[in-house]
Image (cartoon, rainbow, N blue to C red):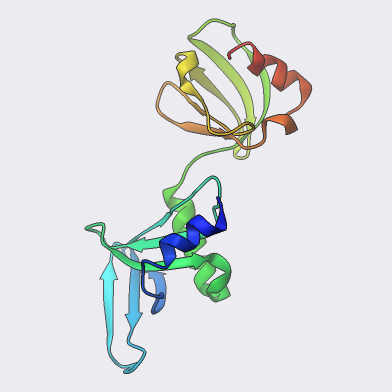
Length: 175
């Protein structure tokens, strides 16, 4: 994502306040906002959600912490701008929310007409996916694809030219 675009969004939002993010005993994410002028004054929000503004193009920029009613509470321009413990908490919250394994290799496909079963290697290990139709392969850029399986699970091909020759040859048959 173009940094100018990200900056145009961040200029519309006030700078992020001091905060802490942690899990409570019930496993819910809790955000504590601290008042710069009066450190004893703070607000707590339970069941907050951490989301990326640009999850594929710029995963470490544009992070938002939302209340349970989807109001933005904190905007974080980049993950590098927060302390290491806070970054770890943010990354944990993002990991829990996001599930988009990256396809690293296509081992084989059951056929070249849909529906068909793909045997693949992903960033989360080997698995199979059932491709319902060729329309379930979406091109995001010249080298980035998202493949949706029969159950709605999305798989990312981050860098198509970096796949091995066999994988690219199998993919070429579908589009």
